[in-house]
Image 1: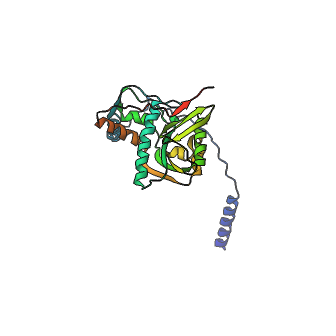
Image 2: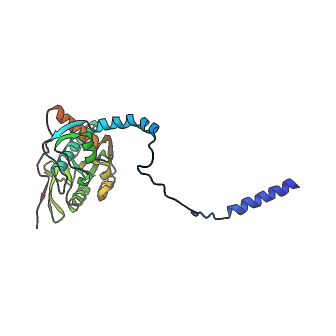
Image 3: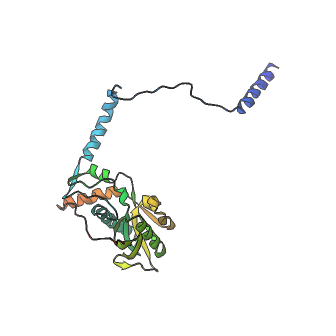
Length: 253
């Protein structure tokens, strides 16, 4: 009988407690100040030091030189040309590795993603991490002519972006005289656009990329491509020399 009463009481408590709404509130609080008065954990610092020193050594590594500072600005700039050109070449190689030979190719990068100037003089690995702090990967997007026109409309309304392998005239936020590989857009062809996964996923309002159902993602990061390219220039005793060929011709009212 005692067991039955105990079981009944336990069941009542469980059912009762399940119907209760728990209310949480802060009874009291206090601030814990973290500043120079907080002691250093020497054991932890000794553990971290080898890793920190290794990273600092890698970041300080000089990988190339630039005769002048390069600044990213719209509608186009020497820095955006430089990065777009090297990503363009890497993208063509990526497509070749996928045994893809159909369709003309060009490249677009977002100028706002270049977050620091290329310094004059020595270029370190840290310099490139400052220019490109994001983990953006190279992507090839297959697009038809209709969506390509929408893409250039967006570029024009965005006051330009980094291009390679393509050109157009910008007037009143509209794109005219669009050329891919030196030729006007062929309405019956498909094209490959080399870009970053950020833009391919609709970043910076490039939602037109999401209209394509063919996105090929490389395992290469854009930052890695920049570093590799500058190292290759250095191995040839060459400094960073952006191509100055205009890609966007701006016409004022």
